[in-house]
Image (cartoon, rainbow, N blue to C red; front, side, top):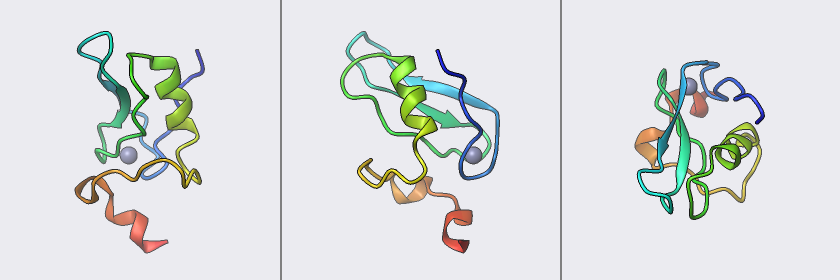
Length: 78
Ligand SMILES: [Zn+2]
């Protein structure tokens, strides 16, 4: 499995998988530093897919944006 890349928003390395409480729950990566979240996987618990989507998060306009309250302020300063 590919390693998780640092958070694209804050550079944080304190990352974890969230979701996946059941075998068909989506899972996503969350940054514990700024609470940014990567895209959900589609339909099942798949850390490898969540990692892949997290690592490609920046510059992937087809991925749904996180809820506004989860978008760090730093994003708006660019
Ligand atoms: Zn972060």
